[in-house]
Length: 161
Image (cartoon, rainbow, N blue to C red; front, side, top):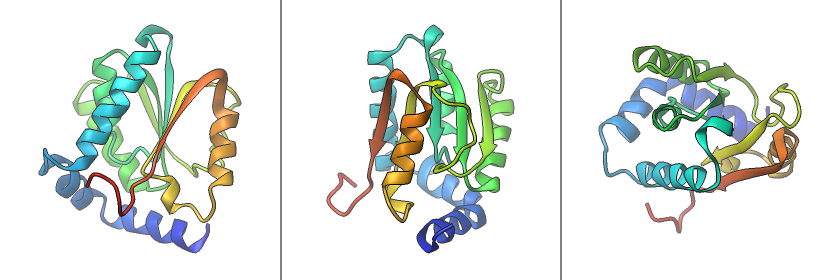
């Protein structure tokens, strides 16, 4: 892993619980919630739950997956942080969405998931942690079905937050 990628992976692994509490659970007005709602609306606009398989690269604590599962969507969440995946798995069991979502520790630039499996790939607030854009974009393209949709956003200095 490159320096920025490995640094961010270590940060999220070491701070998974605090990050989840501080930036999601305790801050109902944090911009991450607005971003999540926008992603949910996009998915609902383009896909029926019964025929859509979603991949969330950099899934963090699994909160988007929980919200999508309530709407009937299923898929896989991938994160490089084993601690974030552990939080996601616990949340999925405790909040009854473990049957719809699988969570795996993995590298978003090389997931080892079979080609063209997903209707929608999400990379939300992730690409800025990559040393270059091309690997993540190629991996996303490889994983998407021919008519699939990539939802990509970048957290930046000029963003709403």
